[in-house]
Length: 118
Image: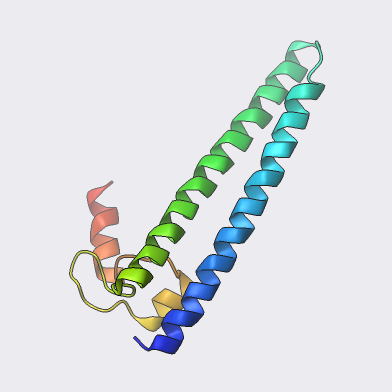
């Protein structure tokens, strides 16, 4: 993997992380507004508010997980192991890295992992 590609992916990862953090901050503000505006209402309103809260919480959990994967990829860049599969230690193809800059497994190992987790 070339130094230019690694630097490009570092910039992409950093930008993705910044966007995710901004998005989480906005969601957090939206969530606070939702909680503050909940007034006593009928059961349908209360259920709807609960669904909205659950959706916001799950999105935040997914976003948090993605931020962790981005941080891990940035750490691999610092350690000089970025672009190498964590399982088989082979180089991850450039097209996979471009499609998923925080990928830590090659397609073959990722497929095996997904099959085992079913």
